Length: 306
Image (cartoon, rainbow, N blue to C red; front, top):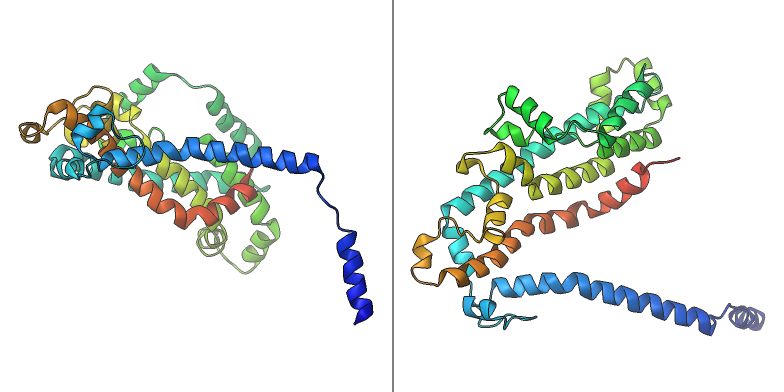
C-alpha cells in the first residue's frame, strides 16, 4: 500500500504543469469564444424579446434585451392572417416534398458514383462537378423552366434546384468509406438484387449521411425565397419567406387591414417582423436537436478526402 501511494505521489509530481504562457493562451481563447457567443446569441434574444413586447415599445426602441410590456399581439395578428398562414403551409409543403425529392435523387446519384464497378463514373462525376463551377445563368434557367411548363406551379420550387452538387460529393464520399465493395459482392452471391441491397443494407447503414442531407436540404428549402420570387405569380403559392421579405424589406403588411384599424400600421409592421422571424425559424430549431448527433457523424465520415 505504501509503495502504491508513493508511486501515485511521484506520478502527480511528474505531471506536466501548464506554464503561464499556456494559461494566458487558454484565457484568450475562452475570452474570444465568450465574445463570439455573445455576438451570436444577442440577436436571437433580442428578436425573441421584441416578438413578445408591445408594438409601442418595439417601435420606440425600448427593447434591448428583455421584453418590455409583454404582449402577444404580433402572434395573434400573425395566426389570424390568412396570407401568412397559407404561406406557412406552403413552406411546410415545399420543405417536406422538396427534401424528400432531393435526398432520393442525391442518393440515387451518389451511390453508383461510389462503386468502382460503375462504368464511366469518373467522367460523369467530372460533368456533375463542372455544373458546380459553371452554370448557364439566370435567364437560360428561367427559359428552361418556362419551356417545361413549370412557371407559376409548385414544381418550379421542387425540381430546378433539387440536386446540390456539394451534397452529392459528400454522400459519395460517405458511401465509399462506409459501404465496402466486399459487402456488395457478398450480397450479389446471396442473390440479393440491387434495389433490395439498397433498401435493406445501404439505407440502414447510411442514417448519418441521410440526416445530413435532410438537414441541409430542409434548411435550404425552408429559407429559399429567390426561386419563388422569380417563378411564382399567384399569391396562394407564395412560401412564408416571400411574405417575410415583403414585410421586412418592402414594409408591406399584406392582409392585416382589419388589425391596422386598431393599431398604427408602422408599429404593427415592426412587431410582425420579429414575430414572423420567430415563427419562421422555429421548425429548424425544433428539428436540429434530433438530427445533430447524426449530423456531426455524417459530416466527419462523409467529408471530402484527398
